[in-house]
Every structure is written in C-alpha cells, then in structure tokens.
Length: 410
View 1 (tube, rainbow, N blue to C red):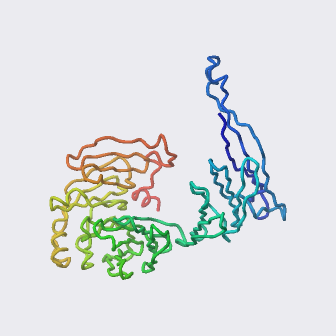
View 2 (cartoon, rainbow, N blue to C red):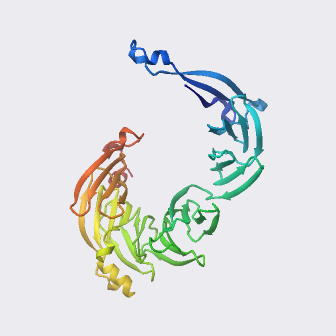
C-alpha cells in the first residue's frame, strides 16, 4: 500500500524586520506499510508501523534582501487528480501536477496574503480566502476566469445564522456591520451599517425568513426588513453604556431577548412595538447565553432561559410579556417575570442549546464539559468531558477570571 503525503516546511530566521521566512519547501512523501513486520509476532510493537520515504524535495527561495515575499501560506491537495495547489504571501496561486511537479498554471488572484485555499472535488474550481480584508475568490483555472470576488467583514466575523428556509445567511462582524448573503450565489445581497459598535449576535425568527435581528455592544437590538432592506425597529435599554451579547427570538417572532455583559441583566422587547417589556435581574455575572424554549409553543406557554458566567442558568416565565406584546401595552403594564427555577453548575457557562422539541438541554462550561439536563424534571441526564479531546487553557477554578475576582484585582 502506498500513498502520497504533501508537507509544507518553512525555516524561520530573525532579521531587522523581525521573524521572516527564510526559505520554504514542499516535500512529497510516500507512505508505505511494512507488510513483513505487520504480520510478524516479534516484536509486537512494530506491527503496522508506517514508514515515510521522501520521494522529492521542491525548494522555493528568493534571497533578495534576505526576505522571501513569496512565502507559502496555504496548500491544498487533490488526491484523485494529484494536483497540488500552493498559495503564497503575495497573493499568487500555483498548480502543480504530482509526482512530477509539473507547473500547470499560475495566477495572482489577490494583493493581500492568502490565508486559506481549497479545491473542489471535481478539481476545476479553487477557492481562496484572505483574512486581511475578509476577501473571498473562486477561480476556475481551466478557463482562467474568476467566478466570484467578494469582500466580507473588514474585521473578524462574530456570528452567523441561516434563515429558516436555508436560502439566506446573516453574518455579524466587529466592523459593526450585518451582511445578508444569498446561499445559492454566494454573494452579499445587502449590508446594514446601523450599529455603532461590534455586532455580537444575529438571529432569524423561525417563522419569519424575511426578518433578521442583531445585538451589538452599542446597547441596541435592531430588526431588519429583508424585503425593503431597512432597519425597521431599534430596541434599546434604559441605562447607557450597556453592552449586549447573547440574543434569542421566540418561535413566533413576537419577542426578542438579549443578555448584557456588564449589567448582568437580560432584557425582553416586543418586535412589533419596540417596547422594552421586562428586565430579568438576578445573575451576578455576564449573561453568556439566552434561549426560548421551543417545546412550549404548542401549549401556549412562553419561557426563556438565561445562562451566565456566575455558574447558573435560570428559567423565567414570560406570560405577562407575551400578553403585553400581543396587546401592544407599554412596559408600565407589565408586572414582571417570574423565576421558575435556578440551577447551578460548577463553572462559568459558555453557551447552551435546546433540543428541537425542547425536552433536553445542553449546557457547555468553560472547561469544555457539556452537561445534559431534563428541563421538565430538572435532573441531569449525562455529561461529556471535552478536556480529554480539546486543548483548553482554563481547567480549574483558580484559572477563572470571575466578576468577583476581577473586582478584587482592580
């Protein structure tokens, strides 16, 4: 049995410019299994050992001023066609036929460094991306034509959400923009620039694919009309300087809830009127996750779940809020929301998710542990210890930066 393995290798060196890539190589390795030792009983530790043989070495170098502007930044390999796609720091893409390493094509597709590259299963389309300005391009190398050039968010993308029909994709970014993408064409349909601070979350109501809602660090939740492409509702909190992060929309699309990072409260608004209906107070840490129970819609009940860095999640009844949202009453007519249950977990809660029928809840903590609960009985069903499989930095209580510890240290 033999298989080609493609490795990228770079030698780093220090210079007046800082660390630079001195030279780059592409190694073509052939993987062979030692059949004789595989069937041997002595020694058993050598059974099935894989041996790598270097078949060819390919060396990229540019010694001008001891700098290599053509540093390799990404590679992709098509196994069936044996095509190697190499992307460089100067935006150049090269195609080679292996194992002879014959140059098939070369093109400069970007000005900024290419950070990711992939080739489609048919081997004719190559997608490249650059994180410098969120650029994306799709290149058909046989016809030497570029079928797609798109620019995403200027900074990091913070959240994304599919519409209920799967035709649209909403993304939010640190550039304070909300973008709506057509999944079929891969192009951005519209960009909303109404927020004044990074967007933290975007969501579609499950029954309204032409409405998207976003939360931002500017303290507002905005609802956008995807038919007229406008911000038709802006919801804010009474206090200034509140940073909103977590976001949820109820199944019917009448209410929207968002949790705050600094005030440790959660807020519920009516999308129809934009009125603040109630404030959920009680957490002692930032609200990291907020959910509407999807299983109670058929029973005419409305509950919201909030999870926090204080190591607890709370279930709230929103019966009064639902009535106020339907009648159009103001916030003064709302008596408040009732805490039905408070459950504590050992560490800070990072995120939560309901099963589609609402009969099971998954709670993820910052030490990569996922705990499953029965929301009705309030009992724990099981857990997954992710620390065994994930490289996490915080694994004990002494490593955590809690609100109380931050207050003491400041």
